Image (tube, rainbow, N blue to C red):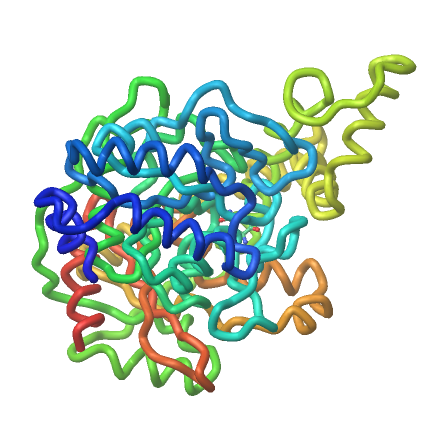
Length: 448
Ligand code: GLN
């Protein structure tokens, strides 16, 4: 059943919200590690209220929330051991907005610790891909995309992307993942990875459902200093599209699937994006991440230990015990890039490269409405294959998604077909605030 159909039936009381929520809670429980917390009694309580009085434009719609987005009184640990048992005393703006429209929060989905990763393996509860349980859901919003593919009941997932964490798992799980323009959706209540890059977005079975979610979470928020006062533009006409030449340097079958989805297109070369986006992204993201993680020192949030020794000893003990190996690696790399003596050569250089990348995109958008590429260079890898990747090989998997994220551009990944029964995602990128163009072309590709 389409979400809109379900919402109408809830309004006319032709369908039971309680039964729908009971079914999806059961699916959440049975899902292969997609959830870190299930808010069963809270969801059922809401469902009963809404069934009696279906008020709001999303009345009765189940929503799953990536663990890093705070929900009041529900454990929100961003996939990290250091935040275990943290129950925020408040909800993120996106949650308040959805609940005001009658949506029902069913639980928190598993992710890489703080968003650090592309396969959701950097965490305790590793979500498995419904298309093949030996494979990754992608990441870092792995649980969100995995459950979207797994669930049979109406549902929208909230995800978060810093460098591709919505598009990547959407591609690996064969669902639609929508990352909005930076600043369009409030980050208030999102546990930070890298503030200048983080964006909350939606994952759903169809493009229109992903947009339905976005319409309800977008909008200015005075609690977020980078929130945009502007709204999404309404222009839907997609006149010219271009495939990014460098992105076709992938497996031939993936390339053919992507191109078979397009009718009229040009090819465009974006050399600076290919050359600089990955190093610039990892320098900026990790510099910001390393400062953000400084606040987890055992005093204010999450895990702590008995107070012993001096401040430095205590602080070191807590952080050594509860941060994962990947978080530690990122703290070291990020701190190094910001250190006096290295700052000019790394962090500030990366900021310059970011400006160059934005300019290259802006030039392309003077001529084209949408840029197209595969979302990922591969299909969902096996866990046994991921174990063999070096940290650098891990980071290189993000080669196609970091560009639009660095530039804050909206992008949509949707299923384009299958290679050996595994989903292949196509990624559409538009200029700032031109999400509606993504919707227009996305729906065309989807209905093809
Ligand atoms: N894989 C990328 C990283 O590890 C992107 C993660 C994200 O978008 N949260 O940084």
